[in-house]
Length: 312
Length: 284
Image 1: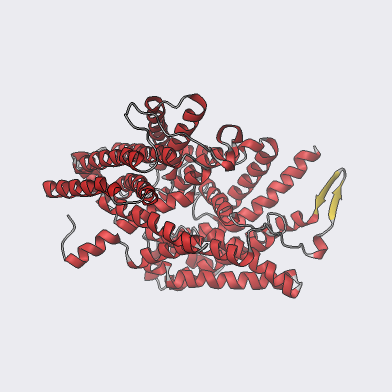
Image 2: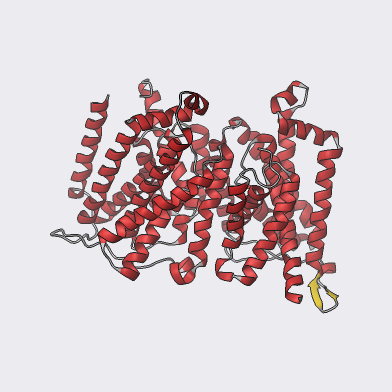
């Protein structure tokens, strides 16, 4: 099983690395965005799909990383080796702080508290104009300069830069979810009490998962601000947090390929529908309702049902 | 002195508005364990429908009736045909109600445009009241009065009537309530309808001073959630005290530290969460 999964991911990565040869630079930009949001959705799935913790404030860690990298590269120095780790540190730090509050709650309370905590950061980004630019956000964030023979311009070079992080994230996350730690998270999702009886320090496992999820959301936020050259409070908002949940559920929670697929579908649909009409938000709302009613186990679940195979 | 009194009265009237929203949110959660994210939509739909009705009929009372009727119906449909299927599964409910929040937000933007609008006040509350050196708009006092009346009414409903006893039984233990012959399904619809009604009433009452505009649904929802977190889920008293507290914090925050406006609301929430995760009056 392990090798089959590895072979599939390797094949997917080969295909992904060959795509720049056939795609236009616009399409490649879209694909880059899909990969970044894929990392973001997978990071949330570590919480939702594995540990069973439905966070409605996951944009906080994405956004705080994006703002950190944006501010440092604009106001201090555009130094990848300083800015990128700083973004990750802030994302992990904020999730370590928020986790202390959120993990005291369960179920709907957990949803509500993660939502409210996420809105605190949104409020700061929105209100503290002198630092964050308020509603206007931070424009013209530069691309990182790396000791590479080519610059990270749009199209191929930047795409491969993101693809490398995507590959490393998938590798790291699949190692985590298959490790004894990941197995314990699934055990906690299924029955917290049983795991406690078995002698697991349930709170500590959940706390570490919370921080790891924040860290990987930070990877996505870092990449996004480099990609987009711009960050605004809407990337800290409940709408973005909820979109991450939708991506995970649409693809299939508790798998890694599911959230990545879910992210790709949403990015694709947003792009397609926005090109034809103004009512993307309405369509997105309908997608939420349809997915909840008809595809609760996501695309991966639908495929498995078709093939008649059992979840791995 | 004038500043403090005026701001306090403003804060209390905004707090009463938040109480209307939070009471419904809290009741619905208490009985059905549903976190209704579309609750903010009921507020703006109440405001927009009310505004349309005022333009047709010219009457604030008729507009209030029309708006609350339409929104209550929307609430009943959402509960009966969508939320009921998902029992106590919090994630599908959250996604579903968030979907409705987006749908209503975009429909409102489509139908009523992006310009912020305010409802005209009923003519008798156009005047200001003078108390010594302080001049205070009488409409704000009216809002405080409505909040108090609704609060008393809800308290009586919960403590003094058979319906209230059934609701309390359902909140404590839905299975046991069902066992003793309470129709929990019907009760859930009734409570959801009541919550939607109160939120729509909030839209009407708040329309003349908070206004209706794209994004008001999210802002009101977040404030109401903070009230519920501070006061405690499922507690009427919590919604009332939390509403007043958050209303005052928000008003003084905006007046004294405009740059940190939202922070003055969220920081106390975090402190209360740290000390009492179930809120001031919450049991669970």
